Length: 258
Image 1 (cartoon, rainbow, N blue to C red):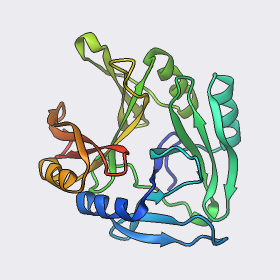
Image 2 (image 1 turned 90 degrees about the vertical axis):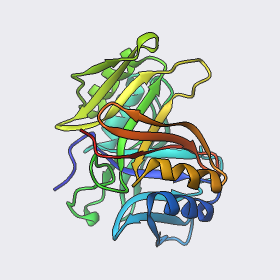
Image 3 (image 1 turned 60 degrees about the vertical axis):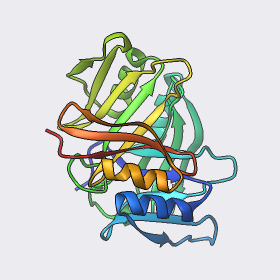
Image 4 (image 1 turned 180 degrees about the vertical axis):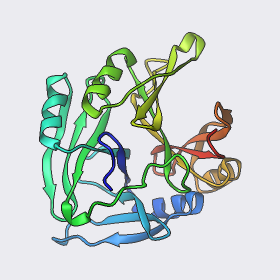
């Protein structure tokens, strides 16, 4: 069964050192890695797996590509959604492109400057559901958090583009609201306004690990930096946000969401 429209179906790390990233994330999240065959012998692509299930990709990316973590949102018509992004004031960084045996995808930027992918998987991949995002399964991304310049403008953009809804907010006092995001019956994450002009606008992804407190030592030993936490969050979980040794920021979460 395919994923619902608007679901995050893949996560990808563009990094200058794939081998070092494999060691770092393998130690913390527990992923094992396989090489995705390049049909033309070009850029190598590494799949991070939980067991035999692929959930993330690692690559150096093309020359000049932005480094960091990105997500792919499932849409049925990539070209139409790219046009919708541009019509709303966003930008296209990579036009809708077919990758044989994988799917059609585009790399776009929302009107507030946050980049992400749109994707329709190739029929050769079958009708199976992606579990790259899951609130409950280990090793998956269990929370997607958007920091933006203007959530009052960003929310209707994503609601129109991806069909999301929002029925709940949590006040953060002087920092404004933390607005929860749902896709169908699934709570994907939340969005918030940035707390200062220096804070980057971006998506942050929280991958589920066994114990974030234990992960702190592993992050530091590998040359990464913990920039927030460990801290408890509403819903019974515990999180950290770190910068990996190659400079990409990422979140880790442990515990069950209540």
